[in-house]
Amino acid sequence: MKERRKNLKTVKNIDNKVFALGGLCEVGKNMYCIMHGDEIVITDAGVTFPEDDLLGVDYVIPDYTFLKNNESKIKALFITHGHEDHIGGIPYLLQTVNIPYIYAPKQAVGLIKKKLIDREIKYNNLIAYTEETIVKFKNIKVEFFRTTHSIPDSHGICITTPNGIIVTTGDFKFDLTPIGPCANLYKMAEIGSRGVTLLLSDSTNALNSGFSMSESKVDEALQGIFLRHKGRIIIATFASNIYRLKHIVDTCKKNNRKIVTFGRSMENNIEISIEGGYISNKSIFIEPEEAKKYPNDKICILCTGTQGEPLAALSRIANGTHKQISLQDDDVVIFSSSTIPGNALSVSKTINKLYLRGVEVYTNTLLKDIHTSGHGSEEELKLMLRLINPKYFMPFHGEYRMLKRHADIGVLCGIPKENTFVLENGDVLSINKGVISKDDKIQAGDVYIDGNRIGEVSSAVMRDRKAMANDGIVVIISNIDMTNYKQLNKPNVITRGFVLVNDNQEIIQKIETISGNVINNVLKTKGGYTEIKSEIINKVINFVYEETGRKPIILPIIMDVKNTVKSA
Image (cartoon, rainbow, N blue to C red):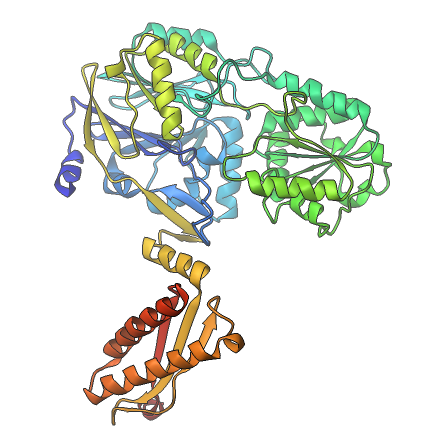
């Protein structure tokens, strides 16, 4: 396999290569590459958030090894829109790989700049594009078409190569009564009339039948709640859903309410949206201290925490630990969001705590349309397929079941089944004169971000973290004299997360005895530190497992006291 990967680096000019470093068989971490000879263009550079078992990990990004190995071929990174799963990886990418230019729409440019400033990364080649922009390289031409999503300035990308036209939709829906501008169906159809070879299309909502609900319906539902309730209104929504924020602002203006914001991401997105002109009425926002001057029916609190995140503003409000907000009996809390898979339990806990504090809570139901997705459902996916009319189809951005369903939808829309590709990250499609076949596989996987460290958390580290979280740690400390091969004291055992020492003295004493015997036996044969530690781990872990059924981390600390004193 290594040899096959190596050969892929030197490609004949007649071939195109299309592959994903992230975004296939998962939701998030979007990163797609198109290569023609000595030119590579990249679309999107996202992150995903860790699953519960990735202890201590902040973000997950794609493995950039292939890009690093082919750095000289990279021409530019093109961003479809400004959501974290499409731009969140840019700071880490720039620290790893030289990216000559980044092209992004206006809203995304503002968000990217903020990220780079926060991380003190200087980058001077960030360029804002519009729907009229055309970027040309030696063999590749890149164009853009406007789509509708939950954030302004969302675009699909059309990439023309000598071997055919490749279209990537980015995230999209078709909303005929949107809060912002409509998608450019005319340009999509015009691109489709050219003869598109390959379509990569958003699969997030491929399992949902029909059409997604219009954002304007959410506007109507929120207006109804505002008219009925005379107390404070607290709204939790995704900070990145700029159109939702916009019509919350507009609804507050209609109802003569001032807005107080909580949550750093919320404040940053509103600031960038005001600067970009997507949200007006700057005067409607007030500081928390000012809110005390207004009656409850003149205040709306806008905050983060839709997924029950423990440190988010809404969770602290529900727990009664927020320093600036205490819930009142006439408060109304609105979850203008959907629950991300895996977060249902934490969201339910937050909602229960809110009810226990006596407030009314609105969530999205068939009777209360207070959220709609920014991703198209089945009928919208069909419409995109009909407009672009590709010869080949590769669903992207979705779990396997979503990709598979989207491929089936493609077949319903007239694409031969053998012309659809449900792939994994690292799988490569080869395009030669308009004919596509599956090719070799390149290196693609997950890289963990822990604080400011990129890729330093290996699978071995994660195994240790999981072991400590599940079974604890046992530390065995002993002083020895390596000059005379003597043990100077009885080993001392310290445990964390394993057992309570006071309640399990018999087990602790047995561990001390086993460790002491191991040290004496190894020293008699004039063995060294490595042998002592290895034998302690083997003997103790077997004993502990037999006694408790658990496998804690065993950490022997053996100190040569006399040699340490001499060297000091």
